[in-house]
Length: 170
View 1 (cartoon, rainbow, N blue to C red):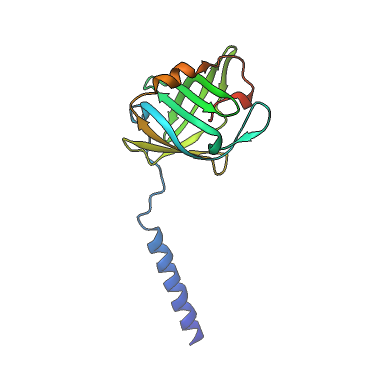
View 2: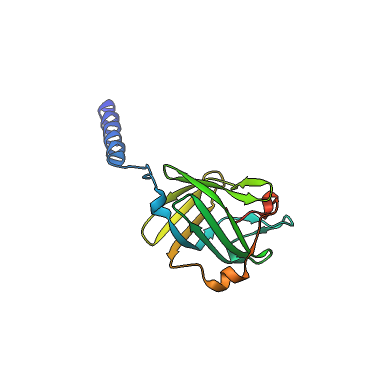
């Protein structure tokens, strides 16, 4: 009788596990350059980055971040982090399936982003970037019409040979 009970329990558990996995698709669909083309404003960020002085900053320290992603694989990043001030960084990016990665232009060439990001929850009005290696680094963007002119006017373009800590938010 006990063998029958254990067999029944194992059979039920197997069916339950099989039915829970049925139809789940964990793959994130490929993202195209046309999908991400546009102006995006950072609305939320759970993560941490480093200031030039070695201290760290979080979303609470972010005044604003705008990123302009062009279909020709270039970007402009306008950010104002309290300890650094308003800055404009530019460079190139590429997509590999649902992963975005890129590099900043510098006076001596380029510097890679600190991580690659999985693009998910992509709609006409928003998207989420999740860092591949930095656990808990999730950035949520909303599409906007344009970078405000006052942001452009305040931003100093950074093209010097930047140490890693001087990079943008990504």
